[in-house]
Length: 88
Image (cartoon, rainbow, N blue to C red; front, side, top):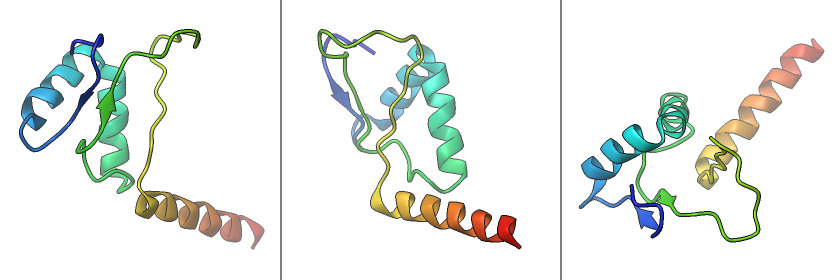
């Protein structure tokens, strides 16, 4: 991935994007796969990779996921269910 320019995963470049993400950012790729397997991410569609803006600290391997509303809801429901079970 050429991180000097932003790139967004689309139907047209999904295979290339996935291969590049796996090669250039294996930790982020593994994280995305884990979220997908847990039902929290529908896939790589619309994931955007871009360089950090100037002035932000650089942390190797830092990932900030942006989840869909459905994924956020599933996660909130799971946390609530676990809290209820812990209270019993």
